[in-house]
Image (cartoon, rainbow, N blue to C red; front, side, top):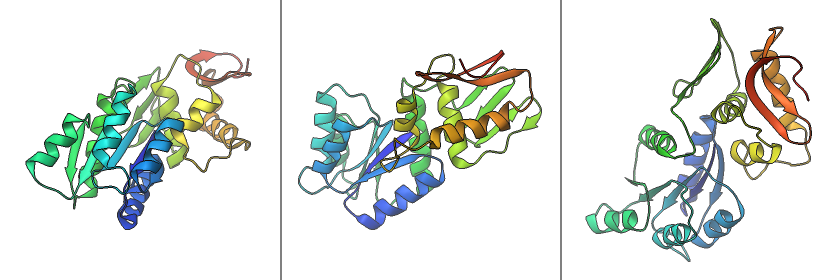
Length: 229
C-alpha cells in the first residue's frame, strides 16, 4: 500500500516515513501544499497523511480540492492545534480522521490501519485463500501448517495480490501500490519478487497460487498447472 505523507517539518516527515516503510508501506513525501496537489494529481495513493499547517496551500484546502475532484482516498489530518474549530474544519473538508501533534507513532500506525480497513478498496486484515493465510496485523503468513518467512517487501507484494485475488493485477498497478516514487519501471524487480514468492509459497506443491498472464500481469488463485500462460 502506498501512502503520501505531507508535512513541512522535515524531521517529522522523515520519522513518519521511516516508520511506515519499516512496516512495509511504500511512502512518498511532500513538504508543502502545492507539491502535495501535484503528486495527488499524478500518482495513485491508498492513504494521505496531511498536515494542517503547510506553506503555499494549507492542508484544509488540499483536502477540499481533493474531494472536489471526486477522490475518495482516505485522509488522516495532522495538526499542532488542539482547538475544536480546527478539528471541525479539517473533518468538514473531507478528512477521515484527525491526530494532534505531538503523537505516539503506534497510535498513528493504528489509525492508518483502521482507515485502510474502512476504505472500500480493502477487505479485513486477515486473509485466507485456500490453505494460504495472511495476517496483516501481525505480518505473518502460513501455507497449511507451514509458516512462510517473508521479507517486508515480499509481504507487501503478497498482501496486495491476496487483496485482489481472482483478478489480474498489472505490473503497473503493483508498482503504484507497493513501491514508491523511486521505483525504476525498467527494472526487473517485480519479476524477482514474484519469483521469490513462488518459491516460498508454492515450492513443489501441485497447487500453485501465483500465476503470470503474459502481457497482462499476475493473478493469485489456487489451481494446478503451469504458472505462466
